[in-house]
Image 1 (spheres, rainbow, N blue to C red):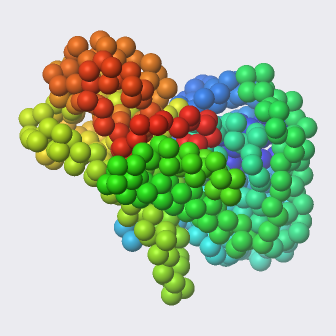
Image 2 (image 1 turned 180 degrees about the vertical axis):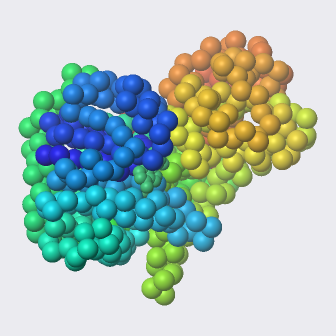
Length: 467
Ligand code: NAD
């Protein structure tokens, strides 16, 4: 099929590259000319494992451009995957969606096209996009559209850091539309993934457990709500374990053992029960805020979701409070931060806990040194106002530090030469915000080791456990 992807960010680019790998002809459109230039040179503008490899492998069926004209007219399916960031009051900012929908509509041809919302959008957005497209179509064609297009929703569940894996081997695919022809086209498009009949890339083999992928085919509103409900549930699972962690700390219990003890219950499951400084990233904060705001429009209080948001905010402050308790005075102290991205294997800094923690420390007069294996450059670009020292290695961060805070659970941090770091530090305090480090090793080396919340037992980290 001919596919157009509007918005070539984490979701759009991954979707486009994977669909091209399946054999579809894909054109990616983005308003950011520098992004399109980089992509046309074969460079990925984001750090995402296996993305450059799959981009290179699918290159003959992939093109990138800033103009909608050719891309949309030939498309059987147009995916809209633009950003939907939060506004001040928690509602998503739908400006990008509106402009993508209108610009696409102006170039839709007489052939039947399915316009798919892949962006996470509030319930009812499908209908709203339909009305925008109808108006733009009438303006451009001088007549009302008559069955030339249909609107669908296809929410995205990929996780940054394993985006390609999650797209080729998803837990499920959700499609929503009120038009049966649109549903049929989307099923056909995804057939190779549903049946797992495509040939797996050599660098990302098909997991043995993945033989077929379930399809949830629903109406528009249900598909839109599935996305929010799923993200809110995952967010509250994380906040739940952190809330239990706060109590565990008071009563002298170990949250690591507790998380394992409850996670082995098949009804609960171990994933998203990692205690620590909480969730971050582009989705959970904005999607939970949007869910609360939508519910409010219908006169409903989403108290469980609001509580999950409160607990998550508190976790970031806990780090600063703990440093204050340990060091007594923060002004003038040098604090090293290991990890900036909101999770490992990505350079995404949106709503990263590390950034809030750094802000809190700078406000209290600390000198802050930071390191991240891939997100340093993006951090300097996106946070030019934060007065911190960027270091090219964890060893440089440790030099003369009064404490180290681990904010992102990069595997490499566990394997650092901790004895060397101990020697370089002014004061051997480690705050482990992700329950990631080897406590017994660090204590044997003479570190004061504090985890958030406090835990001795470190759960083995499933690859899929990150938010
Ligand atoms: P992103 O910010 O990485 O990418 C959005 C892209 O859209 C940018 O490249 C931007 O230049 C482009 N854009 C904006 N307006 C445009 C327009 N009018 N025409 C063409 N391009 C335009 O965003 P993302 O992280 O890929 O998220 C996209 C959507 O997917 C959001 O709604 C998000 O909530 C949802 N989502 C994201 C993830 C994730 O992990 N990032 C996961 C699931 C769902």
